[in-house]
Length: 131
Image (cartoon, rainbow, N blue to C red; front, side, top):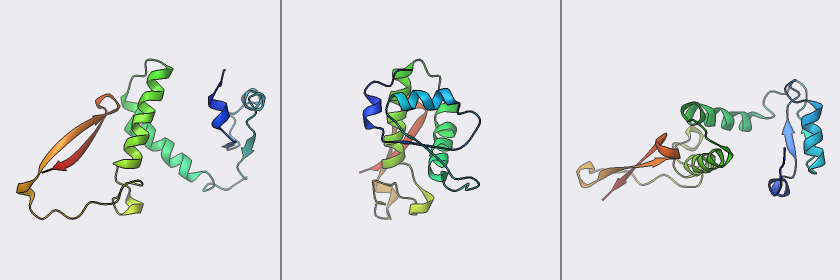
């Protein structure tokens, strides 16, 4: 495994104590200068935000996409990240996206049309109102 420039932006890796992480996994990260931080024992909420994001990526994108190569994976993950942070409604934010506030309420629907934008190769669709 070759991390090259990707290892320069990673400060540390937080992981659980699962059996799927072997000593070889930790060795590769240590060789790249990335320290590994283990989650505490019996603290299921410690890694909850990451687990939630990974679950969303799997359900909404990866389960519906055939990945061709590493570059294709990086591209669709970038597209999904942009969609997730700028368009996808989040229940904890009252339907707003993290990087974009809710638009004002629309009272006259006849004055607007809906425009669809495809993301991640058409797997995800975003809908916006246009005048």
